[in-house]
Image 1: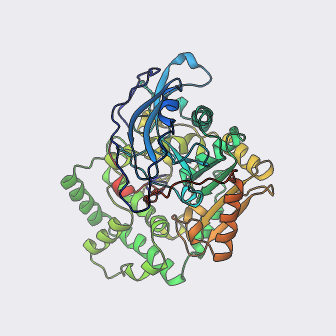
Image 2: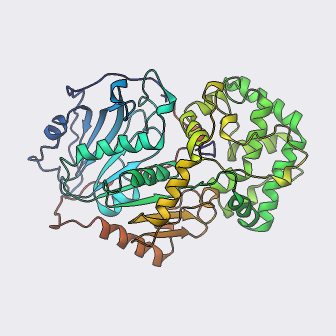
Image 3: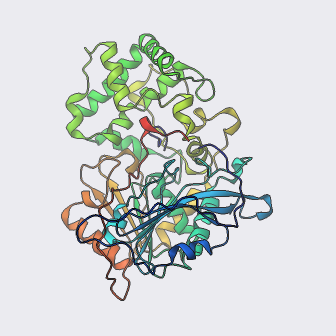
Length: 474
């Protein structure tokens, strides 16, 4: 999402109806008591039989098969004759009968994806399909018509992938994602409620009325210990009071690292101010109360202040290079998703640039757009009144969790992880809530007869949130 708002390139056009297998290196299991996926499993042949799907590569972690795939998608699902683009996704295959977790991260996949599992996939010991959002990385039409980057178009991308893979998988489907990925999972559920059997959305913001954002100001008025809140706000004030010297440090930093500001924010001064406005948000999004003693005092030197802010927010983010990967997100925020509007009362008289804290500020001029509130109003109303089997997990100390979705009473739930930041998950809930959430998820994904699968080797957990400091290049 935005640096914090969090916070794609090389176009790919090839319309693939013929399937090509570029590499299939088998990795034999070595852990004692493990066994590879059954030899008679014909998932590769079945994947190759799906029209428009390309198998890019396969590896075989013990107990799984991991495929990197691409799928020919219409650029505009309402006007298929406009052409197609290739959308990347991956498949972690366990068994054709096991539950399937559809992971929508909301951003791009790694350049070289490797096998890993989200929390729901671990809890269900199931398969996992991970989808790269349209317009991120190579999943971008060429030429790119940005009007085709909407929540409905992406939901329809995912719908086509689900329908194609249901020819292989007979078990239940659960969708998940965190932050923008959680929002993406909600939008898919709204437009195609029959595709999956339940949704687990982590730290998913909900902004149905963009200008009515009292929840965020109320959050910052009460988050964490009072002394810590005051110390972080004082860092923001001190930095703005020292603007000339701090901007000089940023300009020197930019020269060393090759940062520029011309395409997005327009100047180092605007970039600096955006970073300072973001400081309290980034602190509570990524840090915890345990980090409060690290907040520098008013007596800190310019260099000490700059280094702390750089560590918390990262001055390199609000640059042309730092923002490049996230431009599709900012475009969506400007046009449909909305964004937090904060008053910054504690910084009155210290800022220079009016209405800076909004997505159009960081977009190139040709991508700046008017906001349409109707899609978020529609989704919010649907979730409140008609949704079912939707689970929302939020963090108590996470700014993005301040404005939440409210699920209906139809087998749905909302949980808040005590003291958690933007990394809140089921494991961080209170014990009673953790047990209840896990039981609900497993009930939604119940399948019969009971599977007897070979024990699989441990796989790393999916990092479901992007890192602003290490946003990878294509």
